[in-house]
Image (cartoon, rainbow, N blue to C red; front, top):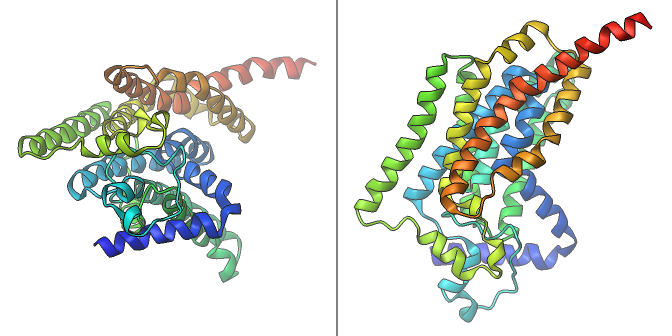
Length: 346
């Protein structure tokens, strides 16, 4: 195993030193592959393009992120940015590698969450685009473009994770394979507009299930905070250790999003907008307005205390589906309805 991890460090060293001009590209790609971006960007974009695809992206994101959390608790997995120090690799074979602000994640490394969660959540987008392209062209090469773009992007995400010392190559590979399989399995089985109790119980099950697993492993003598200690110890700058990379941050996000999805789907605003059927211009306005609300909403999720952070993070991701599915479309619909008579009278 030491040789495998050493080869991973050598690969990161090659990426950093042989292709330094790609640094900004890798940093941008790792940002685009962040699971948080699935919730905050890919989900609203997909939803305003296709309601079914958007809900699938959100649902698969929250389920696979929960699974990734549990997998990491059982599989452990060092991260390169601390392993090079803890293992003594630097003293044995000095490596010319350095960290980045996005390197110092605090959870275990296996499997890669960026690859697993993003790979699964983007699967319904890829299949929807493939279906659309297939109905409009007979060219085999054009038909495979969505699949090719999907694979290329995920490969780039994986390389970016190796580049910033967040993951070893085998962790990336495990995430890519697991994510694609989960996306393939879950995309046709996404629950659409179930009872509100279903979403509430899902949120509760995610929270209680993870807590039960955590305390069971803790009772058995496993220290699940080991990765937080190592990340804090070996990160080059303390400010690079972000609280939103802690394992329970993703749990609060997933349970909040599940509850928020149920509340949104059963809100009067959503019912009114569904009957109205917004036009393309209105959907674009919804997307712009929703993304514009990200700034104030993001502030909600960063109180200084850890316990308050989890609570506010839960509330933030409960509110976000309500904004995207119900409140923002309702506001755009009402404004459009008020402007229409004025336009006609002129």
